[in-house]
Length: 162
Image 1 (spheres, rainbow, N blue to C red):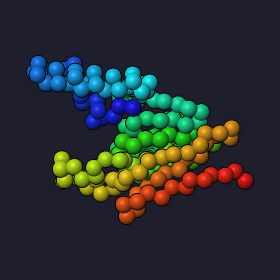
Image 2: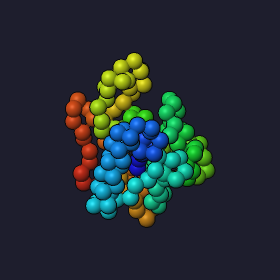
Image 3: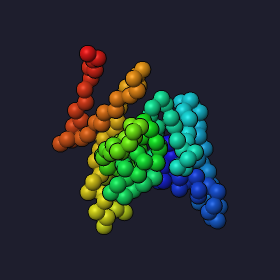
Image 4: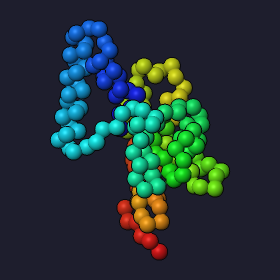
């Protein structure tokens, strides 16, 4: 899934006036598209409606809301089931008050948490290394979040049904 940062190179390949910058961007886009073809991956655009991947009761998006209620915004916007996103680089969870189960997992990030361009922004204080994993099964899904603690990740490795 392309994100807001990734989208810049695609926009630049179409909209920038400088030929050198446009050529650089086109080369980057071609490299990304080649990797996607070689790995048989599917690329989704950075788009709140077209950039959505669904698998059973799970919905995956890059993420679009970035307020302190980002997880709630995504749970409300993407309907029944669970939506997973990482746009805010934070780890968060929200379950809506709803007859149909609506929940959202803000899964964290695996990037530099202190880039210099964010030095004056408090939101990076919420950033946390993490990712989501889980199961899709006949009863729906189970989502778990891995979180970094003191430079290490602790995740279950042997899941059983009782």
